[in-house]
Length: 272
Ligand SMILES: [Zn+2]
Image 1 (tube, rainbow, N blue to C red):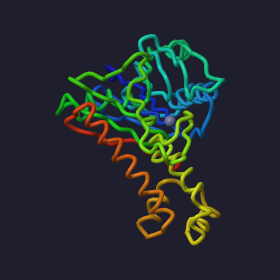
Image 2 (spheres, helix red, strand yellow):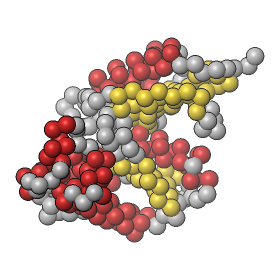
Image 3 (spheres, rainbow, N blue to C red):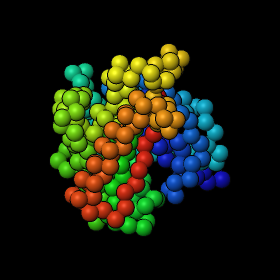
């Protein structure tokens, strides 16, 4: 019997990784979620390699076989040469020939790209790209970034870094410093990590907020902040309103700049 050739699709986010076996039409044959926590580049590389090994040994692919690996990774990627150049621009980051590393270890060809570019490529091939040639995939998760498609092509820019719109400034007088060093980036106000930082920063100003008690019982993530806002909690409403305003400004700016036909919102897993 001829075995169906499948691609191992690896999606590494800020705090978790998903691995799936998919065919060329995007049908998923098996998938597994791996919590990773926040790691540096070298630790994350080991986690990805071990995750692939676990997936290949543990998951039943039916009559399919893994014929290639396609990977979306956080950070700056030289997709053409399969090099993971940077993850969070930390001192410990260094260029890793990651596609070669995967090929050598598992004996199957590997292709890597930035995680949001890879998600945008999927939208282009099997999602909204079937309907239109001009769209923006906006990923709101632990961080914020966009994949911009113009005339059916992903805009990559010099060094494949176009679309890092999380660092677009939407509130220069907010006093909120982003991890990149600038003040008022949309990511520092509206990403999963940003919302968590905002609620912590404003806790003292809202002594009546239910989030004080909730934070003793569980980790406060953006989902809890939005749920509390819907119940009328003033601190949660303040944080959620700022996040929504920031995202609305970002989308407005993107529409003005790129004139897309559609905006696709994605991302998630912002509760870790
Ligand atoms: Zn920033």
